[in-house]
Length: 194
Image (cartoon, rainbow, N blue to C red; front, side, top):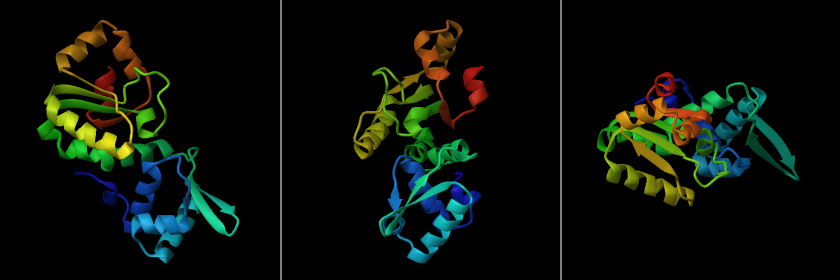
């Protein structure tokens, strides 16, 4: 299983990145980061300074405290968001349990879901799963994440045949899902949309 440690050697940096990318809207105080990562304050400060200098984090003094937040305009923001979505949280759980879920060809998270943005419409789909899906297994995994997030996750599962049929027929529901931003958890994006 691939994870951030494959490409980033600093254990503290990995924890800091996972924290910031797991809730992109959050603003963190240094001591809060130390508590959530369970790392030494000097090591956390060193990583925060480096990430701020590189342009990934925004530093904001408020009174006698310094707060950090993620900069979405960072050139690799989308790539890092995708990597963290695949290697932590629900993305990791799905890839770790891929065989229990069934013979899955594609798992796609919507960009809004990964970025924890609100739904504009009630029929917005957060997760698309294509393949021979064991629905009870998928549903139990999703329920756990719903409890963690504190809100409902809209997901759709369909067979590969149904997916291809709907794609050929230019089904508005499926085209709506495929036209939005997405992060591929399992499968290749080119194969999904071609």
